[in-house]
Amino acid sequence: MWFLSPAESSALAVSLRVAAEALLIGLPIATTSALLLARRRAAGWFLLDGLLHLPLVLPPVVLGYLLLLSLGSRAPLGHWLATHTGLRLPFTVHGAALATALMTLPILVRTIRLAREQVDGELLEMARLMGARPLDRFLSVTLPLISPGLIAGLVMAFAASLGEFGAVITFAGNVPGATQTLPLALYSALDSPDGDKAALRLALIAIALGVSGLALAEFAGRRLARALGR
Image (cartoon, rainbow, N blue to C red):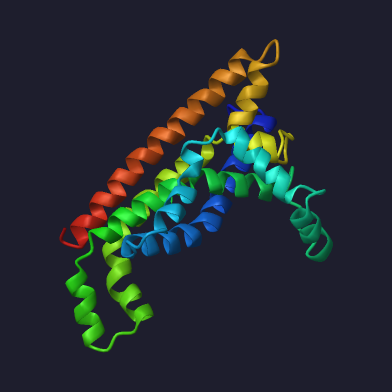
Protein backbone atom coordinates (compact mmCIF):
# COMPACT_ATOMS: atom_id res chain seq x y z
CA MET A 1 0.00 0.00 0.00
CA TRP A 2 1.28 3.44 -0.95
CA PHE A 3 0.82 4.96 2.52
CA LEU A 4 2.80 2.20 4.27
CA SER A 5 6.55 1.96 4.59
CA PRO A 6 8.30 -1.10 3.12
CA ALA A 7 8.59 -2.61 6.60
CA GLU A 8 4.89 -2.05 7.31
CA SER A 9 3.90 -3.50 3.93
CA SER A 10 6.06 -6.52 4.69
CA ALA A 11 4.33 -6.98 8.06
CA LEU A 12 0.93 -6.88 6.36
CA ALA A 13 2.06 -9.44 3.77
CA VAL A 14 3.43 -11.73 6.49
CA SER A 15 0.15 -11.43 8.39
CA LEU A 16 -1.87 -12.46 5.34
CA ARG A 17 0.45 -15.39 4.67
CA VAL A 18 0.35 -16.56 8.29
CA ALA A 19 -3.45 -16.32 8.36
CA ALA A 20 -3.78 -18.30 5.12
CA GLU A 21 -1.39 -21.02 6.31
CA ALA A 22 -3.16 -21.16 9.67
CA LEU A 23 -6.44 -21.95 7.90
CA LEU A 24 -4.79 -24.70 5.85
CA ILE A 25 -3.46 -26.24 9.06
CA GLY A 26 -6.58 -25.80 11.16
CA LEU A 27 -9.39 -26.60 8.72
CA PRO A 28 -8.86 -30.39 8.42
CA ILE A 29 -8.36 -30.75 12.17
CA ALA A 30 -11.36 -28.58 13.01
CA THR A 31 -13.67 -30.25 10.49
CA THR A 32 -12.83 -33.78 11.61
CA SER A 33 -13.07 -32.88 15.29
CA ALA A 34 -16.31 -30.92 14.90
CA LEU A 35 -18.01 -33.75 13.01
CA LEU A 36 -16.95 -36.25 15.66
CA LEU A 37 -18.10 -34.05 18.53
CA ALA A 38 -21.45 -33.40 16.83
CA ARG A 39 -22.15 -37.13 16.60
CA ARG A 40 -20.65 -38.51 19.80
CA ARG A 41 -22.20 -38.17 23.23
CA ALA A 42 -20.31 -40.93 25.03
CA ALA A 43 -18.39 -40.26 28.21
CA GLY A 44 -14.87 -39.09 27.50
CA TRP A 45 -15.61 -37.00 24.41
CA PHE A 46 -15.76 -33.94 26.64
CA LEU A 47 -11.99 -34.32 27.06
CA LEU A 48 -11.47 -33.80 23.33
CA ASP A 49 -13.90 -30.90 23.42
CA GLY A 50 -12.02 -29.33 26.31
CA LEU A 51 -8.64 -29.84 24.67
CA LEU A 52 -9.77 -28.19 21.44
CA HIS A 53 -11.18 -25.20 23.31
CA LEU A 54 -8.21 -24.87 25.68
CA PRO A 55 -6.71 -21.95 23.69
CA LEU A 56 -9.75 -19.89 24.69
CA VAL A 57 -8.76 -19.97 28.35
CA LEU A 58 -4.98 -20.26 28.14
CA PRO A 59 -2.89 -17.10 27.88
CA PRO A 60 -1.49 -17.06 24.32
CA VAL A 61 2.04 -16.75 25.71
CA VAL A 62 1.55 -20.06 27.53
CA LEU A 63 0.55 -21.78 24.30
CA GLY A 64 3.61 -20.34 22.56
CA TYR A 65 5.80 -21.54 25.41
CA LEU A 66 4.31 -25.04 25.22
CA LEU A 67 5.08 -25.08 21.50
CA LEU A 68 8.67 -24.13 22.25
CA LEU A 69 8.91 -26.95 24.80
CA SER A 70 7.55 -29.52 22.35
CA LEU A 71 8.85 -28.29 18.99
CA GLY A 72 11.93 -26.30 19.92
CA SER A 73 15.31 -27.30 18.50
CA ARG A 74 16.25 -28.99 21.77
CA ALA A 75 12.92 -30.77 22.23
CA PRO A 76 12.85 -34.43 21.12
CA LEU A 77 10.07 -33.89 18.58
CA GLY A 78 11.48 -30.62 17.30
CA HIS A 79 14.95 -32.13 16.97
CA TRP A 80 13.55 -35.17 15.12
CA LEU A 81 11.64 -32.99 12.68
CA ALA A 82 14.69 -30.84 11.98
CA THR A 83 16.98 -33.85 11.55
CA HIS A 84 14.75 -36.12 9.48
CA THR A 85 12.55 -33.69 7.55
CA GLY A 86 14.48 -30.42 7.66
CA LEU A 87 11.40 -28.74 9.14
CA ARG A 88 12.25 -26.07 11.70
CA LEU A 89 9.23 -24.34 13.19
CA PRO A 90 10.47 -22.02 15.96
CA PHE A 91 11.13 -18.46 14.76
CA THR A 92 9.84 -19.16 11.24
CA VAL A 93 6.73 -18.08 9.37
CA HIS A 94 5.50 -21.68 9.44
CA GLY A 95 5.85 -21.68 13.20
CA ALA A 96 3.85 -18.46 13.35
CA ALA A 97 1.15 -20.13 11.24
CA LEU A 98 1.06 -23.18 13.53
CA ALA A 99 0.73 -21.03 16.66
CA THR A 100 -2.00 -18.99 15.00
CA ALA A 101 -3.83 -22.13 13.84
CA LEU A 102 -3.97 -23.47 17.38
CA MET A 103 -5.23 -20.17 18.76
CA THR A 104 -8.04 -19.91 16.18
CA LEU A 105 -8.94 -23.61 16.20
CA PRO A 106 -11.81 -23.14 18.69
CA ILE A 107 -13.53 -20.70 16.31
CA LEU A 108 -13.53 -23.22 13.49
CA VAL A 109 -14.52 -26.15 15.68
CA ARG A 110 -17.40 -24.27 17.26
CA THR A 111 -18.89 -22.90 14.04
CA ILE A 112 -18.60 -26.20 12.14
CA ARG A 113 -20.00 -28.19 15.05
CA LEU A 114 -23.01 -25.91 15.45
CA ALA A 115 -23.67 -26.10 11.72
CA ARG A 116 -23.44 -29.91 11.77
CA GLU A 117 -25.80 -30.20 14.72
CA GLN A 118 -28.46 -28.32 12.73
CA VAL A 119 -28.38 -30.87 9.89
CA ASP A 120 -31.50 -33.03 9.86
CA GLY A 121 -30.44 -36.57 10.67
CA GLU A 122 -33.28 -37.99 8.61
CA LEU A 123 -31.66 -36.65 5.45
CA LEU A 124 -28.47 -38.52 6.20
CA GLU A 125 -30.43 -41.66 7.06
CA MET A 126 -32.33 -41.47 3.78
CA ALA A 127 -29.06 -41.10 1.89
CA ARG A 128 -27.68 -44.12 3.71
CA LEU A 129 -30.73 -46.22 2.89
CA MET A 130 -30.36 -45.22 -0.75
CA GLY A 131 -26.87 -46.71 -0.74
CA ALA A 132 -24.72 -43.62 -0.27
CA ARG A 133 -21.43 -44.36 1.45
CA PRO A 134 -20.14 -42.17 4.32
CA LEU A 135 -17.92 -40.06 2.05
CA ASP A 136 -20.76 -39.65 -0.46
CA ARG A 137 -23.14 -38.60 2.33
CA PHE A 138 -20.64 -36.05 3.57
CA LEU A 139 -19.96 -34.55 0.15
CA SER A 140 -23.53 -34.56 -1.15
CA VAL A 141 -25.56 -33.88 2.01
CA THR A 142 -23.53 -32.77 5.03
CA LEU A 143 -21.04 -30.43 3.34
CA PRO A 144 -23.62 -28.35 1.42
CA LEU A 145 -25.77 -27.99 4.53
CA ILE A 146 -22.94 -26.93 6.83
CA SER A 147 -21.36 -24.64 4.23
CA PRO A 148 -22.86 -21.40 5.67
CA GLY A 149 -21.34 -22.10 9.08
CA LEU A 150 -18.14 -23.38 7.52
CA ILE A 151 -17.60 -20.27 5.39
CA ALA A 152 -18.49 -17.96 8.26
CA GLY A 153 -16.06 -19.80 10.52
CA LEU A 154 -13.28 -19.61 7.95
CA VAL A 155 -13.67 -15.88 7.49
CA MET A 156 -13.85 -15.23 11.24
CA ALA A 157 -10.82 -17.44 11.88
CA PHE A 158 -8.89 -15.65 9.13
CA ALA A 159 -9.74 -12.27 10.63
CA ALA A 160 -8.77 -13.47 14.11
CA SER A 161 -5.51 -14.86 12.74
CA LEU A 162 -4.51 -11.40 11.56
CA GLY A 163 -4.62 -10.17 15.15
CA GLU A 164 -2.83 -13.00 16.95
CA PHE A 165 0.07 -11.71 19.06
CA GLY A 166 1.11 -13.59 22.19
CA ALA A 167 1.56 -17.11 20.82
CA VAL A 168 3.27 -15.83 17.67
CA ILE A 169 5.84 -13.61 19.37
CA THR A 170 6.67 -16.34 21.89
CA PHE A 171 7.09 -19.19 19.39
CA ALA A 172 8.07 -17.38 16.19
CA GLY A 173 9.64 -14.18 17.47
CA ASN A 174 9.39 -10.69 15.99
CA VAL A 175 11.78 -10.77 13.03
CA PRO A 176 11.12 -7.98 10.50
CA GLY A 177 10.47 -9.36 7.04
CA ALA A 178 10.24 -12.94 8.33
CA THR A 179 7.86 -13.41 11.27
CA GLN A 180 6.84 -9.84 12.06
CA THR A 181 3.09 -9.67 11.57
CA LEU A 182 0.84 -6.64 11.72
CA PRO A 183 0.29 -6.75 15.51
CA LEU A 184 4.01 -7.28 16.10
CA ALA A 185 4.87 -4.34 13.85
CA LEU A 186 2.39 -2.24 15.83
CA TYR A 187 4.05 -3.35 19.06
CA SER A 188 7.47 -2.41 17.69
CA ALA A 189 6.16 0.97 16.53
CA LEU A 190 4.78 1.72 19.99
CA ASP A 191 8.13 0.80 21.47
CA SER A 192 10.03 3.28 19.30
CA PRO A 193 10.31 7.00 20.19
CA ASP A 194 8.90 8.29 16.88
CA GLY A 195 6.55 5.44 16.02
CA ASP A 196 3.22 7.09 16.89
CA LYS A 197 2.18 7.72 13.28
CA ALA A 198 3.19 4.25 12.15
CA ALA A 199 1.32 2.72 15.10
CA LEU A 200 -1.81 4.67 14.18
CA ARG A 201 -1.64 3.53 10.55
CA LEU A 202 -1.16 -0.09 11.55
CA ALA A 203 -3.96 0.10 14.12
CA LEU A 204 -6.38 1.51 11.54
CA ILE A 205 -5.47 -1.25 9.09
CA ALA A 206 -6.00 -3.89 11.78
CA ILE A 207 -9.41 -2.41 12.65
CA ALA A 208 -10.40 -2.25 8.98
CA LEU A 209 -9.38 -5.87 8.42
CA GLY A 210 -11.24 -7.05 11.51
CA VAL A 211 -14.45 -5.23 10.68
CA SER A 212 -14.26 -6.38 7.06
CA GLY A 213 -13.81 -9.96 8.19
CA LEU A 214 -16.84 -9.88 10.47
CA ALA A 215 -18.98 -8.25 7.79
CA LEU A 216 -17.85 -10.76 5.16
CA ALA A 217 -18.57 -13.69 7.46
CA GLU A 218 -22.11 -12.45 8.10
CA PHE A 219 -22.71 -11.72 4.41
CA ALA A 220 -21.37 -15.08 3.22
CA GLY A 221 -23.35 -16.99 5.83
CA ARG A 222 -26.61 -15.27 4.92
CA ARG A 223 -26.10 -15.69 1.17
CA LEU A 224 -25.35 -19.39 1.47
CA ALA A 225 -28.27 -19.92 3.83
CA ARG A 226 -30.63 -18.26 1.33
CA ALA A 227 -29.17 -20.32 -1.51
CA LEU A 228 -29.90 -23.49 0.47
CA GLY A 229 -33.42 -22.29 1.29
CA ARG A 230 -32.78 -22.01 5.01
